[in-house]
Length: 449
Image 1 (cartoon, one colour):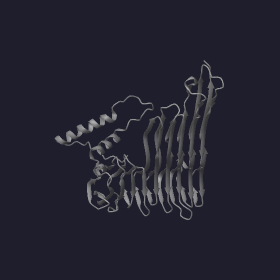
Image 2 (tube, rainbow, N blue to C red; image 1 turned 120 degrees about the vertical axis):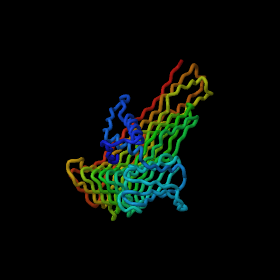
Image 3 (cartoon, rainbow, N blue to C red; image 1 turned 90 degrees about the horizontal axis):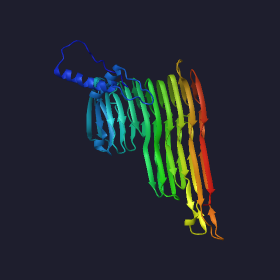
Image 4 (cartoon, rainbow, N blue to C red; image 1 turned 30 degrees about the vertical axis):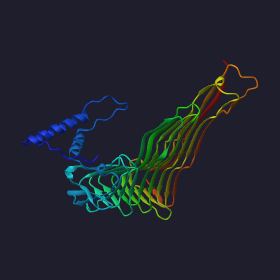
């Protein structure tokens, strides 16, 4: 949250418009402080001064809505100075001006809202060489969005970017006085397919690449995937499959520099997959990885009280071939019952790799330095029980039971490595944990009635 502006309450004559503004602010304040039903976890009430600063930003924030020009390649630039500036949105294809937004310190935040299409936004505010007088908030919303900082961009308070792909080019500086959050997120929501034969396929990937300089007291650099994918066969003897690429990748290239008091770098896969059918299968590939530097070309990361670098793989996959009851009296002889199959095949690495880079955490009293790769996959493969019922089996007739098969195949490395360069800090922990769990179950039964 950007610093609030002082909301003066000194004794002075109040105009009608000022009284109206006070009424609006009071209404908004009541929304922030009104009691709500107790949630499962108690939420903290926002301090009044924070509510006031949020009220001002809600009233005064400047907004650019990309949905008006969906599908256009955008460039966001700036001109002016540290007190008064103008943001200009242009079409990169023909350099035509699409819209402008004038801001001052009273504006609070420039909000850039994406469209439901795949937005492609470049940011280059190097036309203003000092800190711009606002915070920047970019949210790509729908579609597979890309946001790249192409020129040095400095802001008074915060920078927040949310998109599937985010980049900071070489020789480019992104600077904020309070915090920077570059969050590459691929959030599927819920994807479902239900039918006689059910199948889903696709890519759920988030990537963040930093080749330049990022500077702020608090820095979060992350790539994360999430969502729920379901395929369900409504027929008792047909298939349900999910075939996806699911990856969360953070790359800090050689020559990049990251400096802050509290620095967090995260790659996180947390999508849930479920397949339910006679032949049920989840096949998921992709990595949760953080790469810092390359051989002969290292990066520099400097933190104060805390530095956290974490690759976390939390995918869950459930494949179920449900219990069925087969009445042999309804089948032609010789009778055959197809195999019940439930399979999960999860492939990919969970890794942190630091090469020829300088990692420094300098100030005591905090969490210190943690570098960790952690795989917490949860997989369940269950091939249910086939219950066979019959009255009379004809003389000489046969019943072929293909049986049931359930398996979990988890492949890929879990590693946290530091090669070359240097790592220094008040407390340092480098760990790799494989905490994956896999459960299989299958069954078969027969009864005579």
